[in-house]
Image 1 (spheres, rainbow, N blue to C red):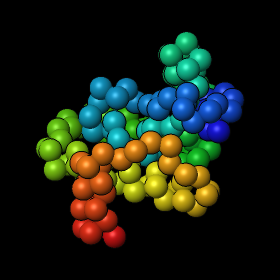
Image 2: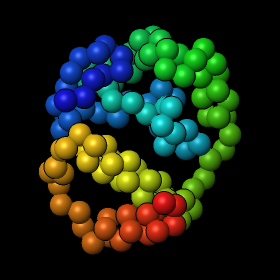
Image 3: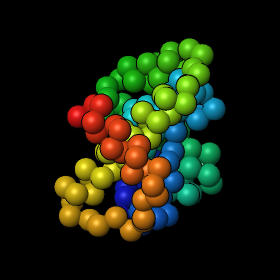
Image 4: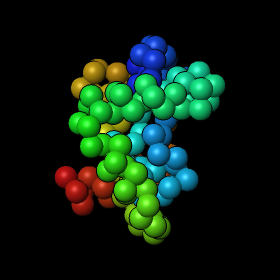
Length: 127
């Protein structure tokens, strides 16, 4: 189960969405962990992000300056290369695998060959 950052509702991990405080259209903040949190469908889609509650939770987690920091970062033009994307994917996969392992949860999906390769390269390069 995952907890929605905005309303606190517990939602099955297969039905949770990735809510972005700053629109994911802004590439410079799209993949920042400070900008991406679990959100239920009702908050993410139905309430267009439920930003007031989202902002309160962000400030509780990261401090009062986080909103300004995200807004400032969003103003920077972001463009990623293929290598940048592979690094982001590798880091995310590593974090998910580590979190699942820490909680004793078995993955319910099968990794493809490319996913295994990305994870191996990431782990060799960054760990």
